[in-house]
Image (cartoon, rainbow, N blue to C red; front, side):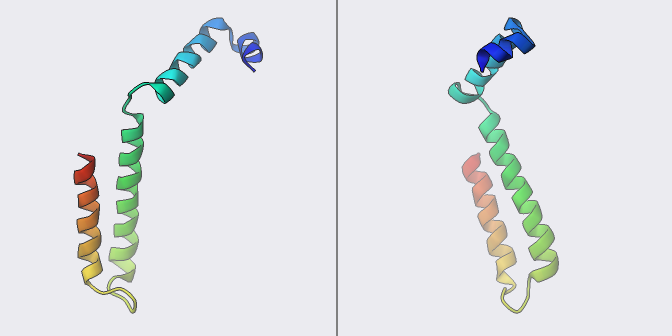
Length: 81
């Protein structure tokens, strides 16, 4: 695999890709935090768009679900902080 990559991309680029891989997997970096924050914000956006606007309150969800969901999400953000 590495011989094929070196033949196609060259030694310099393969060396840089290896360094990038080591940095992403084995070194402390902000990528996991950025990924988590993206998932959390995107999930909350979908929750507001879907639940707040369409299904809450509804036959199976009471009005208080708007508030409890928001409190739980902000608790999630606070624990991240």
